[in-house]
Picture (tube, rainbow, N blue to C red):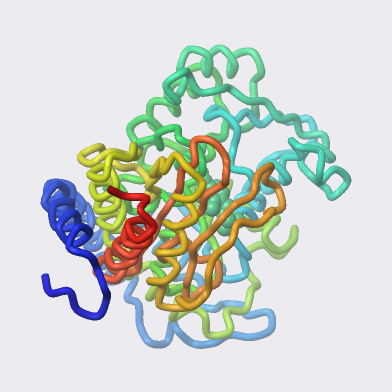
Length: 424
Ligand SMILES: *Cc1c(COP(=O)(O)O)cnc(C)c1O
């Protein structure tokens, strides 16, 4: 391709062309899943007779907001649940997950996480680290937290899960689908299904999945594999890069009802909640989501092929099955992480002129450098990268609203490293 608009070296151009060849089989698989999920969403819009009237702006109590209620039904159908709650007023993924946890758990109950330590921001909700003690954490309310670790390969330890469920009789078993910012593999929906049957055979309880970063990566979702409840963020996969904020919870009808009383208040539940004209963005978001997830997956596959071509270890590897949109690249040295993030930032559509710097991010024990130039603050369905400056000096990157722009962003990251002599 012509070297238009950017000063790419021949080395980077050739390596990128090579990487795209390596990815062609990945791209075909991604395309098939995208088409399937896009049809699933479209048919649900048609079945639910979405119309202009659903985009109206409600205010105040907003009783009977038709668009809000229809969107709940569409999410339920698309994600394989009996019911769902979708609101722009869920402030982020952590908040949405917390509403689901508080909705279901009661004092004296046990929550058992069977995929090792959960995502960092959930620690404060559960009260694992003590830092949020007294803020009304689950621990403050007398809800016990227990954990079954992953095995040495980062896979679910099915035998241990079964014996822990039998011994602890938890009210809820919690599963995190995505790798988050660890190097363990993400869970496939099949693996989640195997955990569900292992758990239910041991003792009946609610199985909840943190589905962040997982939506539309496969044809099936965790509820299709038997999970009872799942939640995620709308500024990741499910919002399609268009929803400006929000989250969703989907699953069994009686559990969604419980969550609705925590979302607003007992007695009112889902009947209130003004949408202020956000419905249009949220409908467009879920409509766009399978496509955008496909673009993000192609971006991740390209990055994996490009950087493994430069000799770095990457996970997932080219050709490996993907169950979330995250790509980790082990860059081995802090200067490489910094150059990567600087280069990626220089290719962002927003804030390209900023230079990212390592900083002491709250909740981390080492400095973190991030590259993000997004239309929606913090949206990680848009191309972005995070890297704690500690062994193994890995960068976790995700997102990409469209493949061609995101590919340029990745190439600029490689170019910056090349300019500094960090890629041979
Ligand atoms: C992003 C994420 C969360 C939390 O979502 P926020 O929107 O950052 O609060 C929870 N779990 C996983 C696996 C995530 O990727």
